[in-house]
Length: 470
Image 1 (cartoon, rainbow, N blue to C red):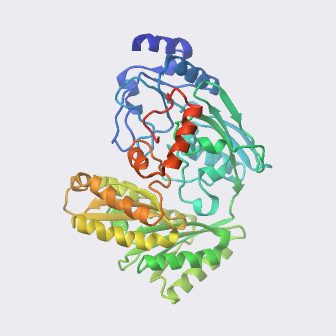
Image 2: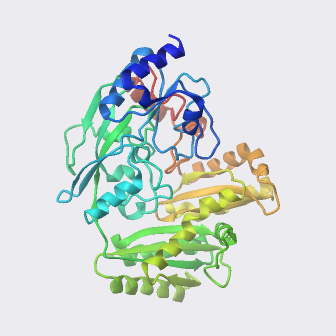
C-alpha cells in the first residue's frame, strides 16, 4: 500500500484529531532531546486509551508497519526517534495521562504511561505518600519512558530505580493483544515475573500503557549537606561513614568534580561558590528522617563533624531549611544545563562497582590526557550506586567540536576502562541507537542470544522500535 493509503486507514481507525501527518505538526516528535538524531515517520499517532493503542499496534502488525513508542521525548540515546526511512508509525503516549487509582492503605498508585513524572509525585504527595523516582527531567519526562529505560535518578540509593518501584504493568504486545498485569502485590510467586521483561526494554517488546507503583511514607524531615573532599578515595570513605551512620535514612549521595561545579558557578546566572576555597570534589548527601527535623540535623552534623575530624572532608555546609536544601540540590541539578551551554560534550552513563570508582576515574583521566591534553573530563553522578556520568568536554578556549572529532577514540578508552573494572556501558539512560553497536560488540554471545530469543518470541515480525537496543 502507498503511504497515503496507509494514512487514510489510520485516520479511519482513530479519527483525524489523533493523527498528525504534516511535517510541521510532526517535527517536535522526530528529533531527540539532544538534537543528535533526526527521523521521519509515516504519521504520529496520539491515542487516548489502551484500547486505541491495541488497535494501532494490531493494525501495524497486519500491515508490517514499524512502531516507535515515545513518551516525553527526553531520552539521551535516541531510543524514541524513528529512522530516516519514514515508514514507521510514531506512537506517542502523551494523551494516556490519567492517574487511574491511588490506594493509600496498600501504598500503591496506578498511572497511565503518558503521565508526567512530576504529576505522579504530586498525586502521591496529595495522599500523604511519596513516589521517590526523581530526576532532572521530571517536569517533562513520562512514566512510560521512565519504565522503558528503567530510569534511576537521585534517590536510587534508598528506594531503588524504576524496576524496584514497579509492582505491575499493562502492556500492548506486538500483535495488538493486551497483557493486564496491573496487580498491587508485593508477593506474587505464580511463575515468571513478566513485567521485568518490559522494564528497560526500550519499547522493543511492546508498548507499556499503564503501571502500578509502590508508594512510601513521606519523611518528616530532610537535611542536605555539601562536603568538600580532597580526592575520590575520601569520597568512598565518606560514603562508608554515611551508610553506617544513616542506614536506610541515607537517601542520596551525589558526587561532583570541581570542573562541573565551576561551570555551574560561572553561570549564567553567576553563583556564589559553595566554599571559599576550591576543592577537587564535592559530595552532596541527603538524609531523610522519620522522627523530626532536629533529629535529622543532629545526625547530619555529627556525620560532617566526624568526617572533618578524621580528615575525610575539608569543609561542610548543612541546610537549615527546605530552601537551603533546594539551593544545595540546584548546584547538582544545574550541571547538565551548564554543560550544554558550553557547547555539549561526549556523554557516558556508566556504572562500575563502588569500590572501583576511584581507580576507574584515575585511569580514564590519565588515558584522556594522553589522547589529547585539550580534553577535559566532567565527572558527576550517583556515587551511592556506582553510576557516573563521565562526560568529556574540552579545556577552556578549545572549541567543543574537538571532543566530538575524537568521540570514537574517547568511547573506546572509556568503555575499555568500564570493562576492566567489571562495569556496564549504560546505567540509567538505556542503549537506544547511541550504544546499540557497542553493546553488540561487547555483550557475551550467550546473553545476546537470550535477548534475541525473547525478542523473536514476542515480536516475530520485528515491528517494535526497530534499530534500537538489539
